[in-house]
Length: 296
Ligand code: GUN
Image (cartoon, rainbow, N blue to C red; front, side, top):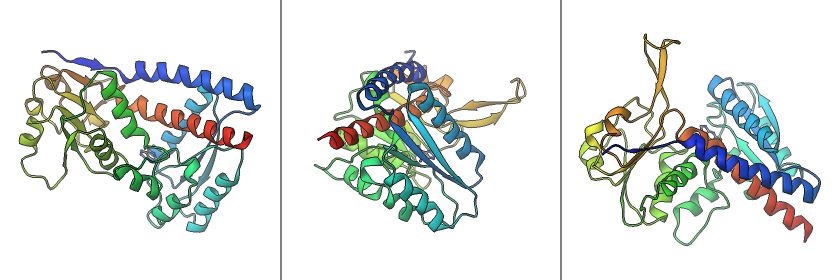
């Protein structure tokens, strides 16, 4: 079997075109655009690049954005003040606190401050708690895990009753995507750095979500024939044959896995474009909820 290659960029482009239409209608109706506020603290170049990409995507779909950019030596009070200001700003409907924050900042205290109405990243502890619980719904779900779920639905993966294996348990991807799969009635296994016999566990998986951040960690012969594979990893590896001397690979051995899986995401161009799209989607949803409430 040769897998369907899941092109996240195509799906993201289609969804972003819909969001652009919604944003235009929103502006026409209310007289102002939806707004996203980003908080970026520290000097991590990757975080700065993510925030730039997110703001550029906002611009493309007609969502206004502002960024509070702070140095690595900013204090807890300064970071919290930026969140409070965005909470109080009626032009801002979604707040994004780019993670990780500098080590001396208490991340939970900052995330807890974000208004639940504006928590478009879904990282407020109350939203994560609601995500974990049966019969409760968070106001928003985190972007990358939501993107994974959209991709599973796009390829028609049967989630209910499936054996789903998540590799990685980060707060940003592994943990929330595991909870979302369980909510969707999958039978869930989470593997991580201390798990024994990962290969055997993955061999029983109908759905594999690889989010461990290690280049080609999941081998092609671990994949069950017909499984759906969502690869969240983006790892840079040296490649003297490449123009830049490196190339990007996922957490899965793509070339071998695609011969066995029924569907597999590309890296790059799989989950990556969906992350930004889900943030835009959540911001649009937040703006609509807030504006409609103001009108009543
Ligand atoms: N850092 C890495 N991924 C993310 C994300 O999706 N949201 C935020 N806020 N920070 C991140």
